[in-house]
Image (cartoon, rainbow, N blue to C red; front, side, top):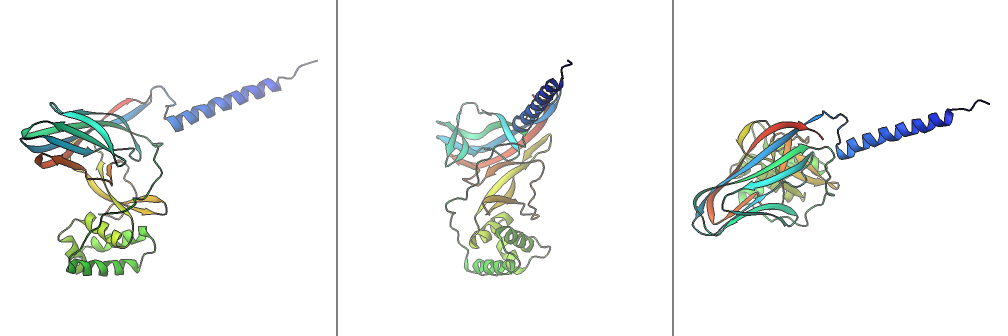
Length: 281
């Protein structure tokens, strides 16, 4: 009697399916490449801090990227001769801290980080801050802000649409008197943030880098995030776009200031970046 080979074929097919599913799972969840020769672009970003020390103890604190959307941090280091350096947590934020007992004159500190695009970067569940800093308009600004909000609220129904309408009013080719008055003493992002918070919308200011190979001394670009329906929605204040640019690396997301310097003055931070291709594995 001739024996059937069907069970063997079924088992072989199941093994092939399991192997393929495992390979796909490792590729999607762990970024393991399908092919051994696959290449990935790795970005090296250098933050340069310049300031003038005043002759005594110096402490410098820089906000560091923490689980930025779309990217994964591979390595980080500081290059600061004579300074002690450590990475500390402060109210949920990662900050790099440099310190020295005594320094005077021009000082330069460096922080370098390597990142790679990662579509499966793990993000913490979004949470709205418990409270926001209070602010005050002067009398003329308060009237202008109220009128701008009244105009924007007529054509908006949610925090996102209110943000879009306010951006339209503030960035119009010929802004009205109210917008011009508020923008005369504050930046576009600051005015937008204040108006939204006055309307009861939870916001946070963010800053990002537009990644472009071989760029030097680049500043961070300001963005604003609006908390709506359980998530943070990012807006470009200059255009009103909600789409995160393809090569935008969010360095600073709300929280404390970007840079604090104790024992020094005339501080600034700038960024340089290069990219290189390495084996994906």
